[in-house]
Image (cartoon, rainbow, N blue to C red; front, side, top):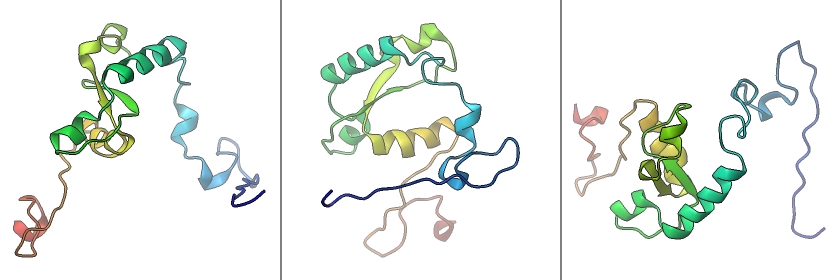
Length: 133
């Protein structure tokens, strides 16, 4: 094998109810239902691919003036098990993985995360940054 790396997870001693591979697997993976049980089975995968074919660019990147390929179909309003809302295509948006995993997840959790950009004076431009309070 040339140029590759092999990652091996070894079982660690554990007490009852703890993850088998230590810190490599976070606790929430065990408590959360499988994707198919949450409605993300074969039908979702087909619809997702069709939607990405129709909307290939990340909507958040486009708002920022950048062109990035979308890889995730996101629900604008989290459906939380409501299948009518889950399958409502007007509630879908195409996002790149970075925006889905960072910015959108922060919004869903009630945060209003803004980027900390630096102005020409060398200070943060975000009004909620501690330096600007």
